[in-house]
Each structure stands twice: as structure tokens, then as C-alpha cells.
Image (tube, rainbow, N blue to C red; front, side, top):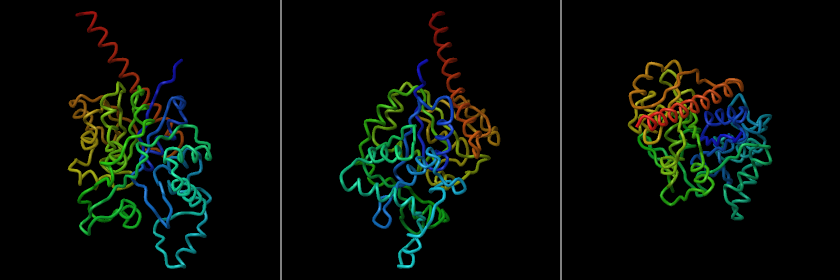
Length: 328
């Protein structure tokens, strides 16, 4: 049996959980992940890729499960010494984690592409599901608050998402070039799953890379997104503030608005079940099911259900088209 070719667009903790669910499912061999690189930034002279590393550590079972980010069994001796030397240490980087950033920065200075660096680091952590990058160029999300512009990490980590969001931009996006690996994967996909990630700064940053969204719109893939909202609230992170800043409603309708140009189906939690009829009226297939993912079993159950729902809807659509052709 030919493997189903699946692409997962993923960012943040929600993206990592969805990636783990697919990796633990029967569909792992046919899955590739396109991750978010727009959260990347430099700290202490080192290039840090938070979303890619969270994906990598999660799939390699090296993640700190309690935090949802960083390495398990971590120590912080270097950070303590940097603090003693008067350096800003609000970005928590553990000793094991720093080894990743030192290695990445060393290769980056040698001219090795970000995609190749990710492949080498994934191999080190025994990650079997390929992690692709949307671009090898530097793209950075910036957030404008009433106090002015700041990097996403400053807003998210240092400021704890407290300030209101006025505007969001992806610095460097106009000059970025999509990787051939990402474009080829999208073109060959039968199913594209959008993880329950922040639709503005995680998935939105991926889609903003020139050619990426156009490739999705041109593809023959069935596109299904998992809403990051439960009961109209975010499980983690500032997606609600970001949606509001982007002029979207903070509910399932707002998630649909982010992906309306190419979306076939939306997965929503039972707490948002009242939105199902409206979504169906927009022409979407809707799966209402528990979407909170804490355990491996919950992650695997949800992603398996998502894939099987999408496959059944594709089959129903094909059967309808064949029946219409026979009757015409």
C-alpha cells in the first residue's frame, strides 16, 4: 500500500504536539513537517531557532514535558554565570540547549544552509520524521505594541505577552525565497494538516514566505486545520491578541478567516461546537472532537482522527464526482 503523503505546517507547542501525534500514528512514514523559522533570534552571539528546536526535541523525546520547551534534565550554569556578569538572561537557555545553538551558529558562519543544519541536528536527536524549513533566509516576526516595536521573543518571553498588539510584521519576508524541499513537498502532498498553532505568528509566518501559500492553493491536497482555540480561548500563547490585531474574530470563525483561501476542513473542540453550522455554511467540512492534547495517547488519537476524517471526505467527494459524471 502506498503511503499517504502528508504535510504538517507547525509552530510552537501546539505544532510540536501535532507532530508527535502524527509521528506516533500509522501515518508517520508518509509525513513531513514544515516548521516556523520566524521566531528565530540571536542571543549571546548565538542563533536560536525556538520553534524548530521544540519540534526536534519533542520528536526526539528530549523535550522538557512540564515546560513544553527546552531540554529535559537541563542545567543552567552558563546562564547563571552570564547573569553574574551583568548580561540579560530573560531568554532561558539551558546548558544542553546552548550546545545546539553553538553548533548551529558555527555551521551558519561556515555558510551551511539552515535546512542542512536542521537535518544534522535532527539526526543527532534520532528524529525520523523530516523537518523542512519554509525558507533558508532570515525572517523575523516583530510585534508592535503601544510602547513600540519589539522582537517576538521580547514580546513573548520577556514581556510575557502582557502588552496589547497593534501590528505584526515579518521582517525580511520580501527578500525570502522558499526552499525547493518545502515547495516540492506541498506539490506532492495528498493531505496538508495545519497544526493548532498560532495562525498569525506561527502558521502565518510560514504562509507569508513567497510562493508557499500559492503552492498550497495550487496543490491537489485536501487541507485541514486544527483550531488552537478551545471555548474561544487559547490553550497557550497570545493567539487571541494576535487575531484581534489582525482584525479577525477570536473564535472558530477567525481561524477560518486566516485560512479561507485554501481550507477544506476545520477541526474544532466540542466547546466550540456552536460554530459548526456557520463553518459548514462557508463550504467547510467540520470535525467536532476533543482537541486538548496532553498525553501521547491524546496526540495520537486526535491526529489519527484528523487524517481519517480528511480521507473519508476526500473519498466522499471523489464518489460524488464520479456519480455526477456517470449521470451526465
